[in-house]
Length: 396
Image 1 (cartoon, rainbow, N blue to C red):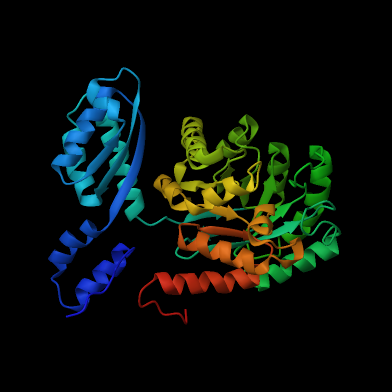
Image 2 (tube, helix red, strand yellow):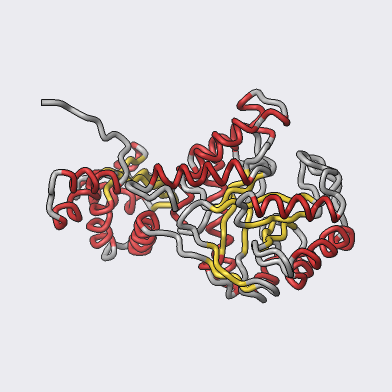
């Protein structure tokens, strides 16, 4: 007799283990989800609602952690940590749908979140001026960074002429980049803001020559709606909005059907994950109100944008918490200051730390990796896919 640990096993692993000793398919479907516990945090609960949650979760074998004053009938809003398997959540939600105090609406949110965690991210089609296709998230996609600016923190000045930029972009496409992200203005700390006219003067000549030839979709990295609009007209296929969803960007995105990246800016201390999640909740609601289909939105937590080292590390550690939105997650970590601080590496010595951080991100929910080094990360993405897909044919 021997004991083996399956600590941390995902659903696919549990299913594979059961099949290995001939458990029936009906049994696998019934039992495997019971091995995966899912935890949610809920805020803004009436005290009575918190007590009902406690009762319903205990009745189905789950748990709800509450403030100890809830049993005394506290008047302030409560929060709760909920613990249960997916199957238990579904049973509990059936009961909650008949309860008052906003619990019926919470049940719908919980069910949607469970379904999001279990489902795959669907592809996003794009139809640019010269190119059409789709972003397929069956593996992590690699977004190559092309900074057409003299003051970029990493490669400022290296690709500041059109011939140098063209050569660099073609090299990234040949190295395996799935998307080329072109930016004409720096976003480094203490950067000097550019006018829209100056930013366009850097971007548009390059885009007009490149877009008719390149068979890789181009995203435009900007915080100005007028720059994004001009870039789309020149052949860009994706809006990579770094404004924090300004009204102008919202209006522009509503006028087209292209993929739209929304990025969070700012810190939040230890609560950074909740701050980012709140921003995504609010941004998706604004997009829905503006008529922008959720299915074409990509979410970027904004690593490095007014976040200190600890905030970035907390956000990276808890990246799976952002999967509840069931939208692709774009992660840009490449050579960021916090990478250097954590790894104690100078700017030109961060490649191993970059790869380690990106591999963590890909294994924990990142769908698009924004990097200065598409070749190394393309190999890493294939490796992560092979590890995570049991029995996958790594030759494909």
